[in-house]
Length: 418
Image (cartoon, helix red, strand yellow):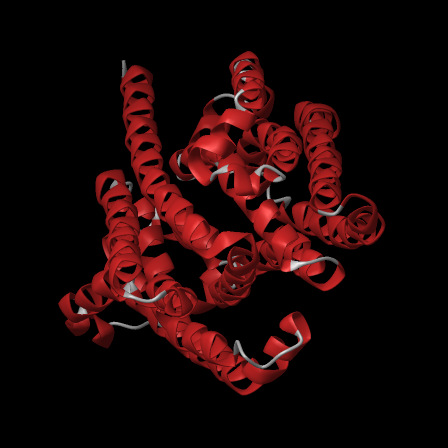
C-alpha cells in the first residue's frame, strides 16, 4: 500500500515535471525559432556562440551544487530556509567574481572568437546578468529539493514566457540591426522578473546563514562540479570550434539542429529532476540492477520516437525555420542518435551518485573532453557542422556504454558479494 502510494506520487511528479518542461521548452523553442528566422544563419550563429559563452559562465558559477543542494536539502527540510539563504549568499559572491573576470576580458573574448571587438558590449551585458541566473538556479533547485514540482515547473514556464514576449516586442518595434543586442539583453535579464521578487520576499531569512551548510554542500558537489565543468565545455566546444574553424553560418546550422534535437533531452531532464530526490530510497529498497532494468524496459519506446523524428527531420526544419536552414537537416539526423542514447543513460547516472561513484563520472567526462576536441579537429574540416555532430554521437555512445557496463557488471557483482 505504501509502495503503491510512493509510486503514484512519483508518477504524478514525473507528469508535472514532464508537462512543465514540455511547455517551458516549447515556449523557449518558439522563441528561438523567431530569433533564428529574424537573424538568418550568419547572425544566429553569432547569437548562439554568445549564448554559449553566457551559459558556460552561469554553469561555472553553479560550482556543482545544483545536484548536491537537492540531495542535501531533501533530507533536512526543517532547516530548508537556512540552507537556501546560505547557498544564495555563496552563489552571489562566486558570481560577482566570475562577472568581474568576464567584464575585464570582454574585448579579448570578442576578438578571439569573432576576430573583432564589435561584440564586446554584448559580452558585457552577459557579465552583468550572471548573478541573476545563478540565483535563479538555486531557487529552482530549492523547489526540486522540497519536491514542489508545480512551482518548479511554473517558474521555468514563466521565465521562458517572459523571454518570448520580450523577443516578440523587440522584433515588432526594433530595427534589424538592433535585433542581436536586443535578444541578448532579453536572454540576460528576463529572469530578473522572477529572481528579484523572490529575494525581496525572503530578505529577512538572510540573517540565518550557516556556513556549515555551505562547506558540506560544496564538498558534496566537488566531483559533480568537476564533471559538469567538463560536460559544459564539451557541450559548447562544438560551437566554439565551428566558429574558429569554419563560419558563423555553420554555427547557425548546427545550433538550429541542436535546438530541435533538444526535444529528446526534455524527456531526460524530466526523468532526472523527478528521480533525483527518490533514487537513494528506491535502490535501498530494491537494488541497482532492478533500477537499471526499469529504465531499459522503456528503450523500445525511445527507439520508436527516434525513427519518427528521423523521418520528419526535413519537414520539421522547413516548416519551423525555412529552407534557408536546410543544411541543418543532416546535422539534426546525426544529433538525434546522440540524444536518444542520452534518454537511456542519463537517468542511470543517478545511481552512480547514490553509490558514491561520482568521481568515476568526473574521470569519464575529462577523458571525453580531449576526445571531443580531437574528433572536432579532424571532422569539422572534412564535414563542417556534420563533423561536429558525428563527434558528439561517438562521445555519447562511448561514455554511456561505460556507465551501463559498470553498473550492470562490475559494481553489481561487488554489491552482491558485499
